[in-house]
Image (cartoon, rainbow, N blue to C red):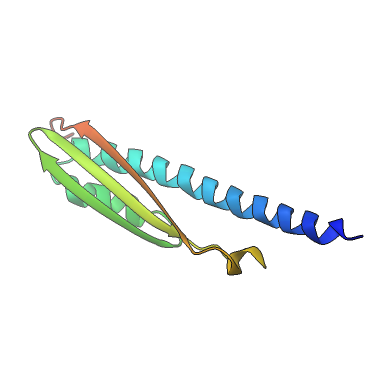
Length: 108
């Protein structure tokens, strides 16, 4: 009987970790999409921001840098730790990803 609350807490902690890992995968995916769009666009920063703007929910920021024929895109997103009970004990998590690609001639 005493182990049931511990098992419930453990399950809730696993759910919270799964949410954070899922968001990390999404941030990495959107970083790749934004960097690819930036690498072939006449205006890399605008193209990258459009990709990130399509990313639903949460607070997401994007930084784009162009240097010596390369474009670097950094995406940062804050993931709320709001799973019941567990969320009270852990602060929100910031997930970030960075990718650098060679600038290519603009498409079209």
